[in-house]
Length: 537
Ligand SMILES: Cc1cc2nc3c(=O)[nH]c(=O)nc-3n(C[C@H](O)[C@H](O)[C@H](O)COP(=O)(O)OP(=O)(O)OC[C@H]3O[C@@H](n4cnc5c(N)ncnc54)[C@H](O)[C@@H]3O)c2cc1C
Image (cartoon, rainbow, N blue to C red; front, top):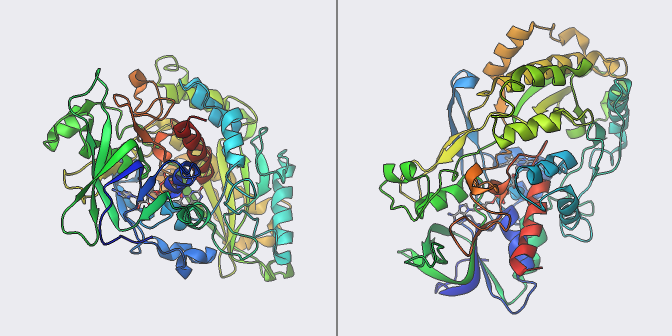
């Protein structure tokens, strides 16, 4: 999977980005032996690198040479803090460097995609595609590593009991339609047979690379998309891409006979569109890029989760002696006494009809009593410390990512505008207060060293603490959203970029609304469906 000495000139399908979604689509397209598929991946092939294959080594990959090392601009809502946002710069993309948590989306969360103006994009369709991606029908291998270790059982059972005492059921099912709230096992992209990471490169990429009709070029960085000129009937046709190859001094033009498929990730798919003249005319003008298709939706609609982490010292008791480091369990929760509903009324009722599709969709999801408003993870550190991690499910704040320069090698300006919607902080602060009480729940209290437990702060101090300490997750999505054009969409329901006949987007950029937790499972489901759409199935 390396750069050949003479560059390719043409392929039926050019897939830009050999990451999570790109390799799914390339694999499925190349099942048809009559078409040729070329994957252009900017990063190297490190499929056997132990930092990638060892599930516990993933934190060492952020900030490494296999990370694009993006930076989020200073966030007013986070006391002016800026933060790092990693993304995989390697074959397999972010699936090769991520935290491995595999959390299916919720039914209501996906049904909202349809309600927002995307007929046929709902739980019924996408849950089938999700099931197609793993454990048998699909090549991704999943396991529940914490459950496999006897020493973890006492804490996991106590965790489930603590939430059961609050009325939350436990399910051992992975793909659950209803209810979303409750506890479930922690599931990871770890092959149970070899205990190695199961990412898009080893699962989808390696199989596809055996086929003679597919070529994966690494160290191949696409600079921009080329369109037919003039447009026919107002529709542009993507005819190829300019790509920089490691062993060639000048960018090469590769011709696409059928389609150009963008899978460069949530920051670089909009970047490539903008560099190619597809985007907000004001953004393009600032960098002297001629407008091919004016669309202010490109790079807008950027969504991401925030998280807050509570380190909790563990008691030195027999039940904590054999705990293994790593994530142990998770729970989807709401606030006590219908507080979620009261806050929704307070913060959304006045402007509900005038609110964006996304705000209305989130309001409708959170109004369902069985839908979670936050996800809580339990993790164990190498020492006698557990981590309680809080991630509110559906942030209302929305930001943007745009090019900072016309230089294809420059990083984009990423601004998620965290806490710009006041409801986000209100909900998160109350969930954070509830999380701080978790270690003293009757079934859990013997596991935690209560001497070190923080005393509960007022709501206002809790908000201030979150502004000072909340962290970005790496769940960004939505920057080339599938929505009607007049509602800020960049692609239609066939994932075709508006104003083009054959330029598609298949990565996390197309999510109109972010999933309730970690997005990788949804990325696989969408990419599986994208491949069928491209194949006309
Ligand atoms: C550190 C980290 C931890 C995470 N943890 C989790 C987790 O535990 N669970 C979960 O569900 N999600 C997690 N995520 C998020 C999840 O991994 C991503 O949402 C998902 O993998 C994105 O898939 P994608 O196809 O959209 O993009 P990617 O997988 O990032 O693929 C984009 C690919 O395009 C390539 N590329 C970019 N620009 C170009 C160009 N110009 N030319 C050629 N190639 C290009 C990139 O190198 C990359 O390989 C995490 C992400 C990170 C970064």
